[in-house]
Image 1 (tube, helix red, strand yellow):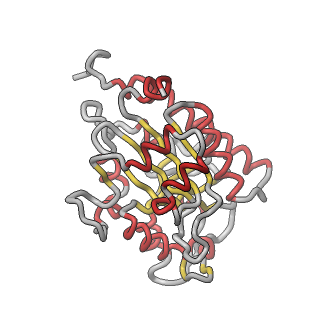
Image 2 (image 1 turned 135 degrees about the horizontal axis):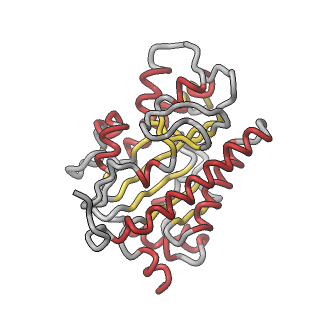
Length: 279
């Protein structure tokens, strides 16, 4: 039975706009990669998160200058998704995909700290976060999403556990861009998927369907919740969304963000727009 507009949670009335913002930015990333295949991952990430945050009061983003150099987490940014029922903490590693290339070396990248994907998995577990990849691609390809036709978006999200199990754990193999994208959903799916409950306003069914390996991981900080799933938004995230000076905020919450290169927050709770206007 369809819900009437009065019965639909307030956040769902505006979620169509937020989904459109993500889709527009994702499409631009695809066109950018087609025009300039040599563009750097860092440039794509900074532009993507800054663009999204500039389009809606529900999105917040800042890159930090003083993350710890002695330790490598494997993540390029931390992404908080705030829904009415739960909040979700994601550690995201960005990777650019190239047409007709073997991406094994990209996924099995080794730096001075070790295998990058293992660092992402281990440090996400310690931080009580869900480890993910964001793949940037200019190549049309099918994904796990049954609705997306593989055409006009350029940012795709994959669970790091599955990428590790399928392409790294058992040793060297050829990894095409299509192989990776078949294990993703488009970025905009995180806001618009039918599996996101209309009545409850939550992401749990979506994650359980597409990324069960991530939720199966046990955190080092058990809270009687799956790893990365929170009942309450931490104070440092709430403060971040209202801070007018990120340098001051970073000094105050340096312990919480010491290992974070950048922080992004998407607030899909009811009243987010009104809270922003009143602050």
